[in-house]
Amino acid sequence: MTEKQGMGVRSGSPTLASLVSMLSEKWLDWERQGIGPDQESIISAAAVGLVNEVWRDSPLESMHAGGGMRGKGPKDPEIFAESTALHTRAVQTLQSTDRFALLSFEDHVLDRHRPWAGGGRTLQEMGHGYLGAFTKHVKGRTNLLMTLNQDFGSAALHSYLIAKALFTGKHHKGMPSWPAIVSTVCDMIHDGDHEAWRDAEDYRQTMDSRPHGLQARADLRRVLVESPETLPLPVLEWLCTWRRGPMMAAVNHVGQLIDPPSTR
Image 1 (cartoon, one colour):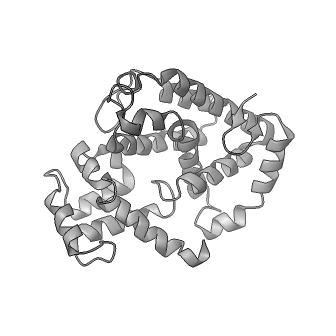
Image 2 (spheres, rainbow, N blue to C red):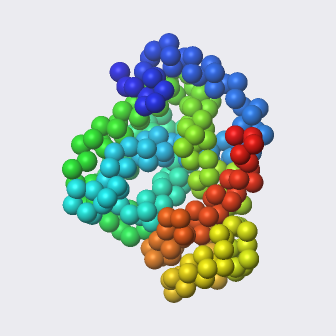
């Protein structure tokens, strides 16, 4: 049996059935948040949950923290690029009529020699010391999701993954808030007085460090919405820099507008 981390869920258990029943009552609330009733927004949000469930919330964190065992673990921009590329793959997986599509997604994620988006390094290069645990995690999550889909149907699978996305990736690419985050990033780059900046010095220091590969505003907006993983790694690194990067500031700003403290 496979246990769902943090929720005490085991495949084939009554607990899983109870969770499915509980999540089935969430659809109206999710529609108010921009997920559904259209299939496109449902699949997009579920795909965020699929990436996080199978790939992101895993021993990948240990590979990333402190650079892993050899100091060669994935960096923030590599994780951002690969996660957005995997989102596209996850959408295709959830749209597929192939009952083994989740296994194909698993194979893609576990391919140790496949170059990642945003830099081209491989899992084999970055994951030394964690590959066994990572493989076990990915296979376990995939098995649970396949059981969920087989026993309860695709709507239950989607609801489970949407709940995951809202809990761990509410402002990721593929979620309703992403276009607003992208717009905020682009506005911040061209407006030092934007309220998302902490102060004028924050804007000055951030913009002084911007890479040469930063695209024109209209192009940057389009690429960030559609395929951020295609941006040069230095641009992704600048955007994702913890605390000072415009991406985190935009996420915090949009998050406060969508979900102010008084309503949390």
